[in-house]
Image 1: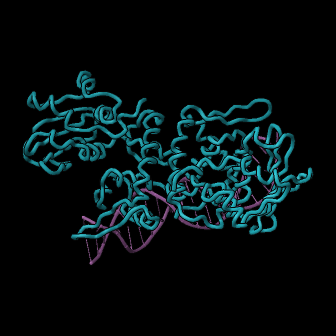
Image 2: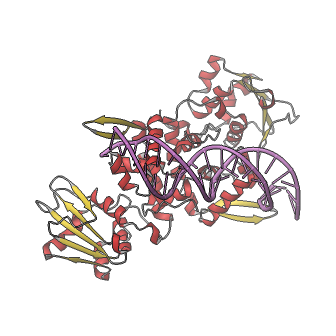
Image 3: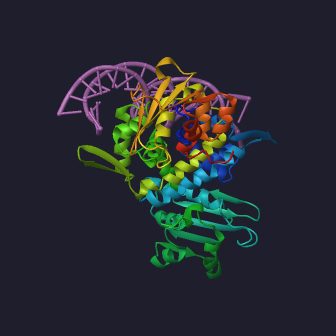
Length: 223
Length: 223
DNA sequence: CGGTATCCCCGTCGATACTG
DNA sequence: CAGTATCGACGGGGATACCG
């Protein structure tokens, strides 16, 4: 599907598929649990829909995923072959954590952070009923400064406008700092102590909030 | 160095480097022990020298390898960061072995096979002194049909013309069959029994020859 | 929600030749 | 041995608009 290398080496044969731009990130999204087109888009905001569509078709033809339409929505699910790319994604990510260096400001996207966090809310640990977590990123441009996570009993939603239920707890932070916490480069505790991250709201909820989120799967990679 | 994804995800940051065409194959060659420019070229025959040069520069700037000139030759060596890509190469290759499907005729290059085999000759198992192993691929075009491996006491050379010392043992085979043996998709025994591979020469050497070569690192991947 | 349809540009890559 | 130099084509991908 990609350009051939004309080598029998399995690394070459695999990379004919995987070295095309965006491909492994699409796989990452699928491995992370996204199934619908627009879910994938939210995890890949800079990818054009036409290219996403093409990549999904390629992956389907390569036997890595199955496209299935049901109940008015289309779902993309990894096949066994696709699932076995998880170790590849993990190996690449683990290497990235260790050797990729400081993140540029360009890499710090609040939407991506919230999208990642929303998938990693720990059920049964969040308060009963609906909880609204507000986020305010002091160092980000106006338009992308404020976000909300609506933790419902059965699902979590990301909003870029006030959902209007009132905010239960508020996280005020430098985006870079919250990303560092999320990636495991620092801890909630250290971030709070440095005051680059502040929690606002009732004391018990402020104390509890860090436990509501599992960190990035790569936060445990030693560095 | 590659086009940015504008994501803080370590998979994305890593793939900015690794998703460019040829890059991971260059790393594979370095992991496999090649150090000099023209050694790398032999493992990447379809890659233009200018592109190889560019990739090496990129990898150097990314801190994955060190370029060192000594005694009139230039050597490229992986840094610790580069070495840690070995698990990535292995994961990609293991997936490739399992899910990449049948090889096309285009992928079967005798030169690459010989180059791979020459790096995996087991020392202390080959006969004392100089041994010449001839290869004749029945199903390959005239020009690339005959090859020789010169097993010396301290090095192994690949030749596409008769080195002229006389051939000790000769392997006559379908290229696809020998590749299958090399990749672990079949065994020397099965190949010999099927007569798609024939050994010519003194009986003791014919018996011993399979033990002279370690198979591809991916031959042990279960499938 | 789940995509197509264009359109154009720019950069990558491939091919080939050549050099210290 | 270890690369540069040059050049052209092509096609991947970004952007945007639009549709069922």
